[in-house]
Amino acid sequence: MLLPRLMGHRGFAARAPENTLSALRAAAEAGIRWVEIDVQLLADGTPVIWHDAHMARCSNSRAFLSQVGLAEARRFDVGSWFSPEFAGERIATLEEALATVNELGLGLNLEIKVSTARDPLRLTEAVVPLLNGALPSDRLLLSSFSQEALYRAHRLDPSLNLGILYDEKVPRVWQWDVERVGAVSIHANWENLNPNIVKEMRQKGLEVVCYTVNDPEAFSPWWECGVNSVISDDPTLFSQLSDAAEYPQGEDNEHQPSDPIAD
Ligand code: G3P
Ligand code: MG
Image (cartoon, rainbow, N blue to C red):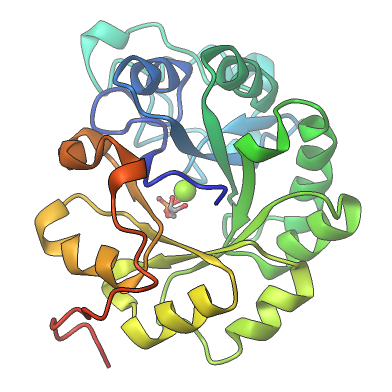
């Protein structure tokens, strides 16, 4: 098994400004072993750690990433919106984030974030070469909603661990998607998941990751259904799972969620 039970969403979104180096450090300090962060390109082609197409929500700027280069993007404060404690935080490049993740001994789920009207291939081609040798392969997973990005990543480096993200209900063709890119994991919105599909995925040897889970109690039946891993804004909410090795693996468990989320 590659993935841990818990991953910090956008670093550790509940505790520090999302997708920043401070969020990575906060995650490590809290004992979180893996983090999920998003990567996209600035106008000058620099891959940076950021979720939205624009900077309005998480900085003191209203710029679009597609319109600013690194020098300009660095002028903006990306920490104060969250708390004065983080004033002066700057947007992180992918290279800085990789170095920090490595330094902290974290595992990384790097999401290739293709915003509307942006080019998945250009982004993937900028990201993949930077991953080479940046982290041990068992501490790195590349994921995306974009099948084009995943396919390109697979062609550029077939040794990469790839995860397929689905937002709406998992499509019937999910097995084709998996084969096309040699995916090791499926990442599903847990509100749109079906227990039978989880079982099929596990039977195919895939790891099943659910996002974004902030209610451990409501989620608990899904562990027994076979879900491997959860992405949470606050993984410490799941403190009873801190010893992941002792948590049931799911395969042999007959329990199924009785929730209406099942088809
Ligand atoms: O990787 C899971 C999750 O991060 C996907 O949604 O919008 O938070 O990037 P989003
Ligand atoms: Mg993400």
